[in-house]
Length: 310
Length: 239
Image (cartoon, rainbow over all chains, first blue to last red):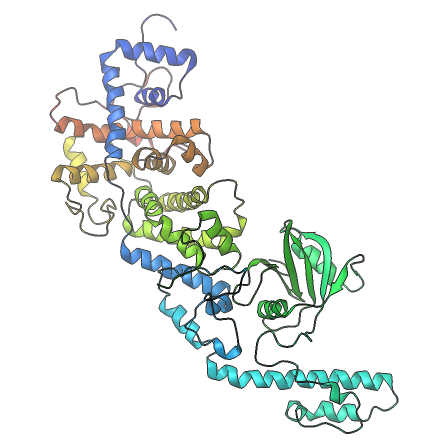
């Protein structure tokens, strides 16, 4: 530029101070400020703006706001997984179902989680105490036993019926309903004596679970999880090259907890995002859990709806 | 409080991992650990205490739900700060624009400062604004003045200045939080400071230095954008 130096604007001076004007232009500004008391003063005042801003003490969060947000987060946690929230709190009546009580004395390999200092919102506390109290569990669990027993009976009799000529007993047992299942043991039905009450109230029951584990090298990824699981559930898609295994007691407990006691269509020991994991699916939903999954610590990595997508 | 067998202070990334894995308490712990910093960001950016509280709560719930998307490419705190800043800036943008004709009048500035007591937000503690932190009267006044002045800034400039000048974060960290280049951070800060200058120059005058009250009208020469002296020039778009 030629001759008479013109004042840079305040903004330009600020930019120069901040180091965003360099090169030839920067040299010009520097030269001008050095020679111009007025602009030098502006430049100095710009520094004082920073000082003034920095002199304001940082606030601390008010206690009531802290409690409010903590409650909101606890409510989110409860909304996300009511069962996990419940099982994580030892003061709940989880013992009647034989569930592993929260984080105390946990078995090896499952790290207990420190309890935070937050208080659950009143809504959450009510929900926790309302959900499945002990007396309800002791009533509904045996009903579940009878229902499952009836299902086994029906299956067993159907199987017998299909394998042999005589099939007169099946309809009567089926129509007998759950109330009769435990008592009615029609004579001449060789299949009947093999039946045991399949599910006791204790989580983790006998290993005669209703599923087997597919062991495969499949790597599921978050973006394709839904599609991959759907494909696996498609009849005839048959994962060749994989093997099958019986689930361990803790895996059965984990799966039943995750699915909410629904029989899974798929339980696969595989990888998720290259991490070892189990993929569990029912017709309309799939979950991925880490290998250490238990009802108290499901270690859920992700979950996705299958029916219509998220 | 019961004793636990594991580490008492797991790192942020571990807490987030537990949260994503289904631990119902982990995110709450993360929140408690960083609550003051995140509150400072929200409050200084939004200004109004109630609105800042709402923005922060929204941000925390949003972070809770979106935690699965965190890829670990930045620090967890950087990610949290970004969510809070975005929520705070959104709040600011919902407000109607204030444009004031700045005449360089001392009385006008006092009026500006006086506008802010109830929702001024700079009290921070939720208690009375004046002298609650053991501050002198001058310090309180400064706070109120700064708060009034900050209201004049476009949201992006305000957010940048809050992070850099008020809270002292390094420019590189702020760049990561805001998802912009360091140069852009510096530019936003520079423009913000320039814009604040006429509002805050009276502070220096009060301290007795009799040098010129900076006239807001240092003429914008050299083809620059209009200097900050003319505040009613309206909002900058992208700041």
